[in-house]
Image (tube, rainbow, N blue to C red; front, side):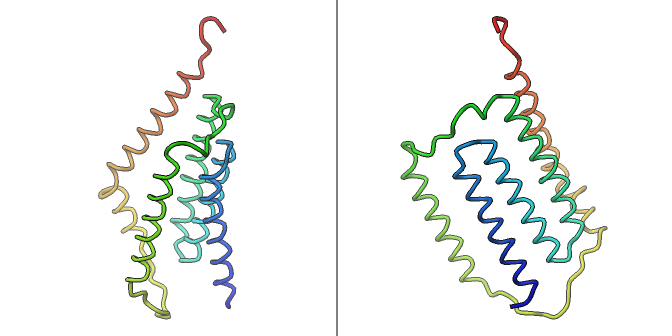
Length: 165
Protein backbone atom coordinates (compact mmCIF):
# COMPACT_ATOMS: atom_id res chain seq x y z
CA UNK A 1 0.00 0.00 0.00
CA UNK A 2 1.39 3.37 -1.01
CA UNK A 3 1.30 6.52 1.07
CA UNK A 4 -1.33 8.04 -1.21
CA UNK A 5 -3.61 5.05 -0.72
CA UNK A 6 -3.15 5.25 3.04
CA UNK A 7 -4.08 8.94 3.04
CA UNK A 8 -7.07 8.19 0.82
CA UNK A 9 -8.37 5.48 3.16
CA UNK A 10 -7.85 7.69 6.22
CA UNK A 11 -9.71 10.57 4.60
CA UNK A 12 -12.45 8.22 3.41
CA UNK A 13 -12.89 7.00 6.99
CA UNK A 14 -12.97 10.62 8.20
CA UNK A 15 -15.57 11.58 5.57
CA UNK A 16 -17.79 8.60 6.34
CA UNK A 17 -17.33 9.08 10.09
CA UNK A 18 -18.20 12.75 9.77
CA UNK A 19 -21.29 11.92 7.73
CA UNK A 20 -22.42 9.37 10.30
CA UNK A 21 -21.74 11.90 13.04
CA UNK A 22 -23.97 14.44 11.29
CA UNK A 23 -26.82 11.96 11.16
CA UNK A 24 -26.37 10.35 14.57
CA UNK A 25 -25.31 13.28 16.78
CA UNK A 26 -27.88 14.19 19.41
CA UNK A 27 -26.64 17.77 19.67
CA UNK A 28 -27.04 19.93 16.54
CA UNK A 29 -23.85 21.88 17.25
CA UNK A 30 -21.91 18.61 17.31
CA UNK A 31 -23.65 17.62 14.07
CA UNK A 32 -22.42 20.86 12.48
CA UNK A 33 -18.88 20.12 13.66
CA UNK A 34 -19.10 16.60 12.22
CA UNK A 35 -20.18 18.23 8.95
CA UNK A 36 -17.02 20.33 9.11
CA UNK A 37 -14.96 17.15 9.51
CA UNK A 38 -16.61 15.59 6.48
CA UNK A 39 -16.09 18.72 4.36
CA UNK A 40 -12.42 18.87 5.32
CA UNK A 41 -12.01 15.24 4.26
CA UNK A 42 -13.55 16.07 0.87
CA UNK A 43 -11.02 18.90 0.52
CA UNK A 44 -8.28 16.34 1.13
CA UNK A 45 -9.73 14.22 -1.69
CA UNK A 46 -9.41 17.21 -4.01
CA UNK A 47 -5.77 17.60 -3.01
CA UNK A 48 -5.16 13.93 -3.76
CA UNK A 49 -6.73 14.47 -7.20
CA UNK A 50 -4.29 17.37 -7.83
CA UNK A 51 -7.10 19.93 -8.02
CA UNK A 52 -5.80 22.43 -5.53
CA UNK A 53 -8.19 25.14 -6.66
CA UNK A 54 -11.23 23.02 -5.83
CA UNK A 55 -9.65 22.07 -2.49
CA UNK A 56 -9.21 25.74 -1.67
CA UNK A 57 -12.78 26.52 -2.69
CA UNK A 58 -13.98 23.60 -0.57
CA UNK A 59 -12.07 24.94 2.43
CA UNK A 60 -13.06 28.58 2.03
CA UNK A 61 -16.66 28.29 0.90
CA UNK A 62 -18.00 25.09 2.42
CA UNK A 63 -15.78 24.30 5.38
CA UNK A 64 -15.38 27.96 6.24
CA UNK A 65 -18.32 30.12 5.26
CA UNK A 66 -21.20 27.65 5.14
CA UNK A 67 -20.25 25.89 8.37
CA UNK A 68 -19.77 29.19 10.19
CA UNK A 69 -23.12 30.42 8.86
CA UNK A 70 -24.74 27.19 10.01
CA UNK A 71 -23.21 27.55 13.47
CA UNK A 72 -24.39 31.18 13.69
CA UNK A 73 -27.91 30.14 12.74
CA UNK A 74 -27.86 27.37 15.34
CA UNK A 75 -26.62 29.71 18.03
CA UNK A 76 -28.99 32.54 17.16
CA UNK A 77 -32.04 30.31 17.17
CA UNK A 78 -31.03 28.59 20.40
CA UNK A 79 -31.30 25.28 18.55
CA UNK A 80 -28.64 23.74 20.76
CA UNK A 81 -31.22 23.73 23.58
CA UNK A 82 -33.48 21.41 21.58
CA UNK A 83 -32.31 17.78 21.64
CA UNK A 84 -32.43 15.97 18.34
CA UNK A 85 -34.77 13.00 18.37
CA UNK A 86 -33.35 9.85 16.83
CA UNK A 87 -36.46 7.78 17.45
CA UNK A 88 -39.76 8.46 15.81
CA UNK A 89 -42.44 7.04 13.59
CA UNK A 90 -40.31 7.73 10.48
CA UNK A 91 -37.50 5.43 11.60
CA UNK A 92 -38.66 2.31 9.64
CA UNK A 93 -39.28 4.36 6.51
CA UNK A 94 -35.86 5.99 6.87
CA UNK A 95 -34.22 2.57 7.28
CA UNK A 96 -35.90 1.26 4.12
CA UNK A 97 -34.94 4.40 2.19
CA UNK A 98 -31.35 4.16 3.44
CA UNK A 99 -31.07 0.49 2.45
CA UNK A 100 -32.58 1.25 -0.98
CA UNK A 101 -30.04 4.04 -1.49
CA UNK A 102 -27.22 1.75 -0.37
CA UNK A 103 -28.38 -0.91 -2.84
CA UNK A 104 -28.57 1.66 -5.64
CA UNK A 105 -25.08 2.95 -4.89
CA UNK A 106 -23.59 -0.54 -4.69
CA UNK A 107 -25.26 -1.46 -7.98
CA UNK A 108 -23.85 1.68 -9.61
CA UNK A 109 -20.34 1.00 -8.27
CA UNK A 110 -20.44 -2.67 -9.33
CA UNK A 111 -21.81 -1.85 -12.79
CA UNK A 112 -19.24 0.84 -13.59
CA UNK A 113 -16.06 0.04 -15.45
CA UNK A 114 -13.39 1.90 -13.50
CA UNK A 115 -10.28 2.99 -15.39
CA UNK A 116 -7.07 1.61 -14.01
CA UNK A 117 -3.85 3.52 -13.52
CA UNK A 118 -3.43 5.60 -16.64
CA UNK A 119 -0.10 6.99 -15.50
CA UNK A 120 -0.86 10.64 -16.22
CA UNK A 121 -2.68 13.34 -14.31
CA UNK A 122 -5.32 15.23 -16.24
CA UNK A 123 -5.04 18.91 -15.41
CA UNK A 124 -8.15 21.03 -15.72
CA UNK A 125 -7.31 24.61 -16.71
CA UNK A 126 -8.64 27.44 -14.55
CA UNK A 127 -10.37 28.96 -17.56
CA UNK A 128 -12.70 25.98 -17.94
CA UNK A 129 -13.46 25.96 -14.19
CA UNK A 130 -14.23 29.67 -14.28
CA UNK A 131 -16.34 29.25 -17.40
CA UNK A 132 -18.36 26.48 -15.74
CA UNK A 133 -18.80 28.44 -12.50
CA UNK A 134 -19.79 31.76 -14.01
CA UNK A 135 -21.78 30.59 -17.03
CA UNK A 136 -23.24 27.13 -16.52
CA UNK A 137 -23.64 27.12 -12.71
CA UNK A 138 -24.08 30.82 -11.95
CA UNK A 139 -27.85 30.68 -11.37
CA UNK A 140 -27.83 27.62 -9.04
CA UNK A 141 -24.96 29.19 -7.10
CA UNK A 142 -26.90 32.43 -6.63
CA UNK A 143 -30.06 30.52 -5.63
CA UNK A 144 -28.06 28.66 -2.98
CA UNK A 145 -26.66 31.94 -1.67
CA UNK A 146 -30.19 33.39 -1.47
CA UNK A 147 -31.37 30.34 0.49
CA UNK A 148 -28.51 30.81 2.95
CA UNK A 149 -29.31 34.53 3.24
CA UNK A 150 -32.97 33.78 3.96
CA UNK A 151 -31.91 31.24 6.60
CA UNK A 152 -29.69 33.80 8.30
CA UNK A 153 -32.38 36.52 8.25
CA UNK A 154 -34.91 34.00 9.57
CA UNK A 155 -32.55 33.06 12.40
CA UNK A 156 -32.12 36.72 13.34
CA UNK A 157 -35.89 37.26 13.34
CA UNK A 158 -36.44 34.16 15.47
CA UNK A 159 -33.65 35.09 17.87
CA UNK A 160 -35.05 38.54 18.64
CA UNK A 161 -36.43 38.66 22.15
CA UNK A 162 -40.18 38.85 22.52
CA UNK A 163 -41.66 42.03 23.96
CA UNK A 164 -42.17 40.35 27.31
CA UNK A 165 -38.60 38.99 27.63
